[in-house]
Length: 196
Image (tube, rainbow, N blue to C red; front, side, top):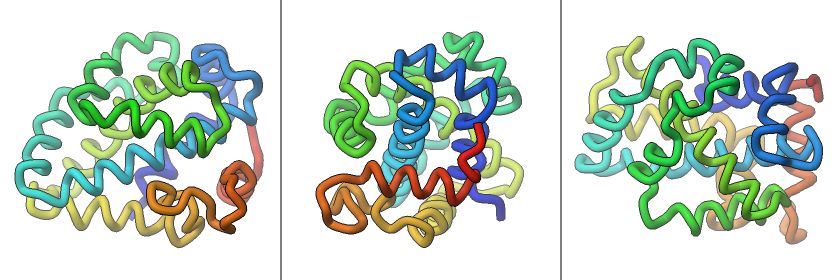
């Protein structure tokens, strides 16, 4: 099975999509945007896994995923030209609710991006990550009872490559030196060859 998170991140951190996203969020460089995308998508995936672990959460996710416009994941570059299509602020609020500030702070700490930039990034990422999950789940006929395993499998693949990322809610840095920035950079280079 293709990895959901890597597919989504790969589309965002290269070529014109990376340039557009960097401009949209006001990041200082494309490298900074890459780190933010990886940290943000990882945080969202971790939250998806946690939410799907309960029957109520899984049912809520199904309802949320059904409302994501499929055009977002079918054309990432086009979505970045028309981000209102994702209704990202609403999606993020429905998904994370009161946890949004806490998760945004974690992403800011992990990526080195300012809180204001992360505040613009997460609403752009949320519809993409959740929409890509919806597409994969529909294509594989996965029901609510199987969502926890699906998200755990997706998260596990990235955790194998970089334990510090998927575990950064409990342990922000893989090598315990207090900063995950080097880990994010290494993961980007390892997975995507540093291509833009």
